Image (cartoon, rainbow, N blue to C red; front, side):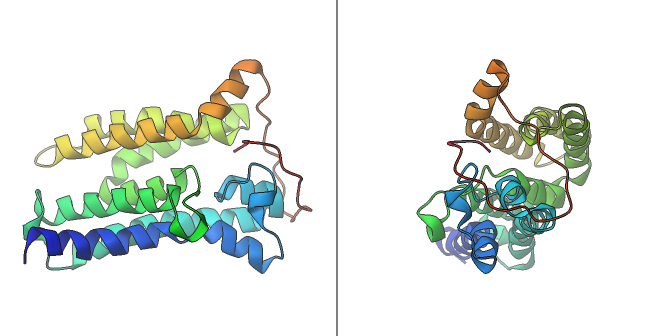
Length: 222
């Protein structure tokens, strides 16, 4: 199998998996376009704030699952020998394509979510111990701040350190480079949140179990 054919068979399906806009579709099923409420973002946090906890958590699970599914797709096929690093190299490439699909989904005008949940799904499948450390950082930062953005930034900062500490052997360099790139993407996507945090204007998330009525637009809130 040629490298070009292998790349197409791995990356195109992985991108399409990542591009599935669950937040948008679940909002439609509830009679709401989440792009017109809160941040306008398609990620789980905006769905949580707009529709309530159970729908936000469902989107969180689905967005993570599509990242893990992209990795599984790459590992199962016969195209590993065509990728640097073999099957694990193909899995990493597919995971990055899924994250790109989530952030730049063709199903919603190439405007998707921040990419955190899909990143978690991808790297839980690739490096579970390292992502476990990142998730622990998320939980701690969120518990202290009640701000998802703070938790996401903590995850982005800790996860590459987790790779450095827990991953050894072949492929470590590729995984670390990918972790740093994705961490930088998460930080970049959270620049509006960082500015609000510095101004003391970043809102805390309300913990609730029931759906709430849709909120009016709030600019670029996450």
